[in-house]
Length: 255
Image (cartoon, rainbow, N blue to C red; front, side, top):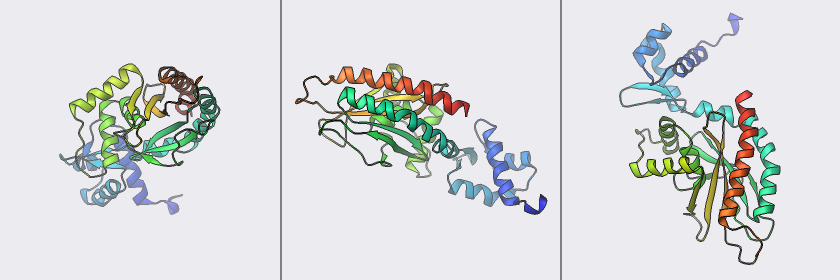
């Protein structure tokens, strides 16, 4: 089997596995010492991992894993299974609320729409499948941030901005995220479309981290007198997200 080894790939995987095993990151010297490699051997490999977004380098010249591997791991088979679970629930939610709804995940710096149900009537807000939406000024993005630990929030913001600069969160925005987590949902006017309220609830993993966000871009249906009001719609969203958490969260954790 030695004839088929790829030494450079081995080195890259050794670095990723080492960084995954520590908190707070490591300097290049510490990585070299732990792996028994020279600085020169690791310099180009670390630069490549940083350039490709798998590793982040802070101002103190310490290296740590980004969320890119997490995104890769959760965007394929587990997410497809989640969509298969979510589709009938989202269809039922659209029928009961008379509103469209969307499911989004965080993937490699972007908030990506992975499933959608249109409103059953001719009024409703739809977004193109696969669209990327804002992490900061959408209910979906804020829910995905709110239900992550503070250090993961910063990593997500760093990947989203992709500027190479140290990310930060203002006290006001941090308080907003903590408020969303405490009450269990986000409700905010749409920045993109007037007269739309974004109602978002998290789909949670068993450890309480957000795996996805379920959102209804709520519009007041004056011509549908029996349609649920905004508070009733929010309750229905949260119940659907909780059901999906019990199914998809367990499946992803156990796969």
